[in-house]
Image 1: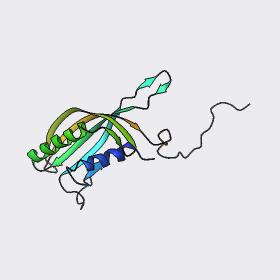
Image 2 (image 1 turned 90 degrees about the vertical axis):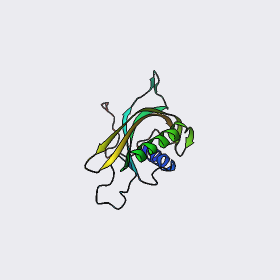
Image 3 (image 1 turned 180 degrees about the vertical axis):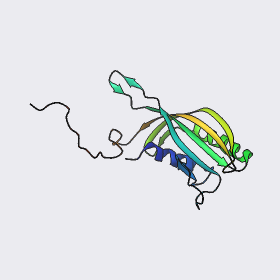
Image 4 (image 1 turned 135 degrees about the vertical axis):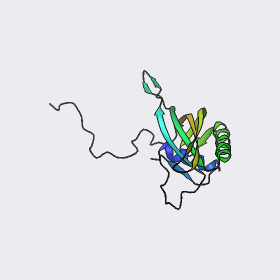
Length: 153
């Protein structure tokens, strides 16, 4: 099963603002040959589950943070604006997901003295549904087989 974060990474790469330098959760640490600026780090912040009396809906609603890193404040902000326009205009089927909406929630900027990089922080709420037939299966198999909690009498 492909997790949504793989799909989102591919979409961020397709935006063509940082090449392939898009990382989930953590950027490579120095010294790393693949750590060149600009780059993006993104991660899942929170789910916003939707339920009916029949159970969870197939539409998923999740918040993600996207961080853009560059030595130039102007360039980091420009990449952020380009990315925002791209994501807000994206709808439809992409890889294993049906993308309904990208809602830009907030943006801040900070300077990181350790890395000497400007860091543009954007937060998005993404509405989507998984398309593949394995959407109800776990992403990994469990080590313990399913067991009934009822006593067998």
